[in-house]
Image 1: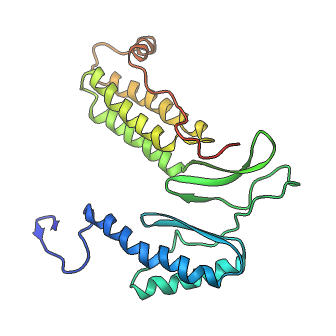
Image 2 (image 1 turned 45 degrees about the vertical axis):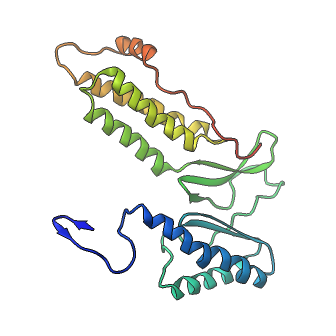
Image 3 (image 1 turned 30 degrees about the horizontal axis):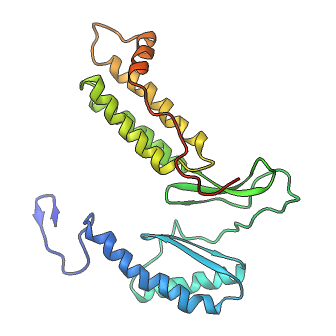
Length: 236
């Protein structure tokens, strides 16, 4: 492992950033968490529960609060037995029960973030309370910042090359976050990228300023991707 000019070979674990690290972590958590939850925790509970895990991020849903409190205590013990710890800022108990049908306004009891999304309760067109997800605010702002920084650093490349790269970035964002109910949170990335692209194209040369009218013509030739829902994870 390289740390600046120093080279070292760790005796334990895997190097940070290694492609092997998430693979081994997934194997370990299958036994430390998944199998343990099914075989040990579930039989102890008075209600239903479900574990949803992706790599080292996971959410556990409990039907009863006392089961949730007991499950969290057991989880801390289980992690400690393998010299692992839960992230203190990401580990919490929160109520996420569906609001009653009689509740006509307001919001659900809580929200939480998972895998780049914020999950929350909202009303469908039928008036029924449904669980929705939207792009986490910090992830959206990061995507906008990354695209803007790319425009700045590569503004002297041919426009066709810039367009192809920006299209790939935006389309990749849509492929992940383009889920049902999240359309309105896809639009800001495109609109912000349009503004930032214009800003940095204008700074390529001081001799011929790129006007808005000329930029609109350029976008007709090199359009940025249109927001589109790629995956319908549940119906409304």
